[in-house]
Image (cartoon, rainbow, N blue to C red; front, side, top):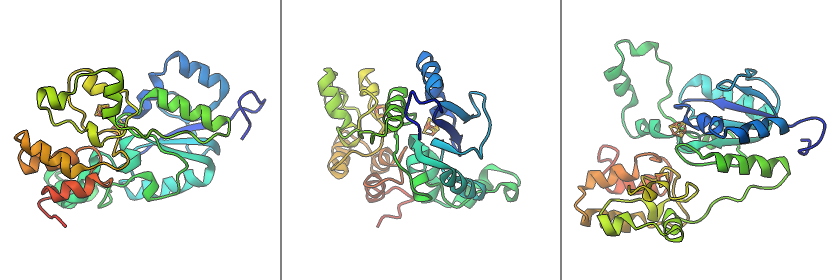
Length: 268
Ligand code: SF4
Ligand code: SF4
């Protein structure tokens, strides 16, 4: 890949799989920074912004969304073969997203409940993250990702440097920013103690509890937090729903949710 400033600009694609488009919007929300980025790279495929060439060879391919259909399972292999760096962005692409809740239940029955002719819907039994299907080079978490992280990752990859992953918990970021703890002061069931930061402790900054959209942090203790939630008055199924909301298929949130009775009570 040519370095930034070389004559041949690095080629970048943004692909969409099963998702809500919110992570692509995080790209578009970069505004002036996106215009500056477009001077450094060629966006060869980014349907939401204009260019469409899904089979193009690229230096960096960002992928939003989960693998939920047989067609997506094939398409991601071609994207992997056509790119140097493959970077899933967002909760759907990193762990299957909210749609992975069907992995815990009878997805076929859900289809039958929603669609009058479910036989016309092509769908896999599970929704999985990109790394469960092909090798990836780096991942950006969050629902949605934030533009600051996307830009930092692009910058690092363009200059041949491994991006530095976030490691602190949301709790740590709250303390540094001086936010009042919503769990202690308001009794809200905040997942900040088990969630990796990267969002700037966005939700507690506005007085609401973190629901874990950036995924699990290193060495979390979800069982202790679940007991704390029970102490706040949550029923066991509500504790399970907290752990299984966004990242139901990323450990240790997956196992914790099962232990608290999630997945139709089919605990280990
Ligand atoms: S991670 Fe969240 S914002 Fe991004 S595509 Fe999935 S549902 Fe949308
Ligand atoms: S505080 Fe939690 S739920 Fe809110 S944006 Fe950050 S990680 Fe996501």
